[in-house]
Length: 586
Ligand code: ATP
Ligand code: MG
Image (cartoon, rainbow, N blue to C red; front, side, top):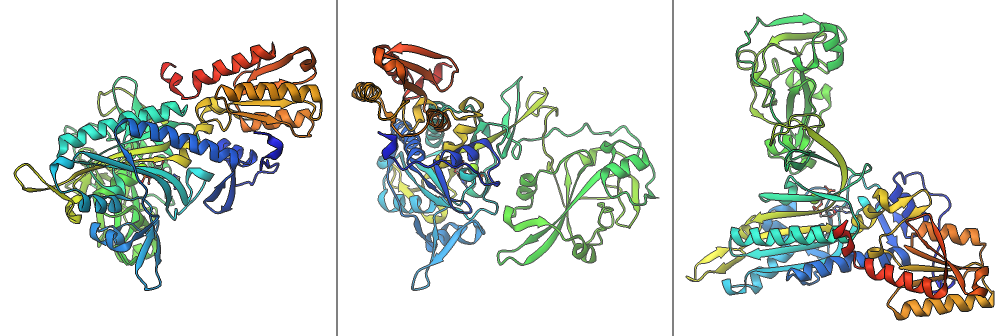
């Protein structure tokens, strides 16, 4: 392909909203273009890479016996009514109506549609197991679309659904997908970690997220070097501080603590460690119509962080149906006092107490009175919770909940997630099969997603896949394998040599881009670095003597080679790396 003939436009000025390397580089290199907030178009180079990622995904899915289909982006609301998610899904769902005012959505995922297909096509145990998938655009009206393709409102997802006779079958399907995902992300050149995850809005019993490790990621994971602990921060259990049963309960006292609204302030005013205080977090919840339906006060030890996912799960509400309360409004209804709220003195409010607080003695908490705290608060005697459960966040340096070692923390990007759904969809939707005894049984399901467009961007954020000058694509997903740069466009000798190299490479199955533009050499080298083609062959003055320059994008050394040597080196390099399987040995 000749670059002069391509639609290729780089950006000099990158919009300020692009904050992370991958987003900046995708825009600068012209691989994607923004259409609206969270909505992007893929330009030729970007699209070639996306298709390569899709094909790696296809190969790995097909290798596990999954079959590709394609369903419509438009999904009827009735199907979502059947699963109970039409109202439960919340504001991320793009809802539309047809001319007859029937409700539809732009599919954010497709459990209902796939369940519907299988319930009408499968009747006997003989037709199971089955796994079908699609690669298609998904739509979610994200509250905060950001980081380009990382969190967009229209994105490409591979989703597949497994249908098994029983849990044992599901375990097999799940294991297959775990392996397939490991293969996909390895071949794409990601540094990643599968971690245990919360099941969230999708539901089900068991889940793993595949997290590409990088400091710019929105996901936080915790792991332990001494055991197998690897989980999202949302999911990871915490070890409670040891109970202080042998410590005497001191008499409760209300003390004047003027202006001490934060844990830091009150701890330093009373000269006690933060571990001896109770922190309050106040929320309002909403019903399905979006009307306020109650208040929640959550309490954790002063030095801990509340874990929103654990709180939401404990309350059995949807994440979108709870938010921080307007304290003034809440104060009138519940008696809380901003900065001085504690579990004693609250009314008309659900109280959630973290699991370690009941074991701890003589704590300090707000007195629900301006400028006052209680000291020597003890659970049972002075306060109680409606719910007592682990709602705190595990963090770096904490005790490992599995082995007692020390927890480490890292950031990353969730590029895929797999779920054991069980019968969460098949029961309400009547997706059953007849077993050997002609008895109806619900089909046991799993669902599995890969964010193709998010993976596309996450690859670039890996430290090994970019530098100050641009992208360094792994061969397996590079838009082209080799770029041949003609230093002086119009020079007959150089053009002839470039043609010779390109056709020899193409004959060997190598994808070649020839930069034949009438630009200054500096501009061409800059662009080649920016778009990140793995192998660069430069045809300049040496062409007359049959010499060219050979350089890998990932390395700084250049070599002067004969035309034949350069062709051979490029073919060997491309063949060794083009399917990404060499990453298994790294
Ligand atoms: P997140 O927690 O990041 O919002 P999710 O858990 O809601 O994602 P899933 O329903 O598990 O997402 O979707 C499967 C995959 O689709 C995710 O692992 C992710 O890679 C991708 N994905 C989800 N939402 C988006 C989005 N808004 N933009 C791009 N990719 C997305
Ligand atoms: Mg997910």
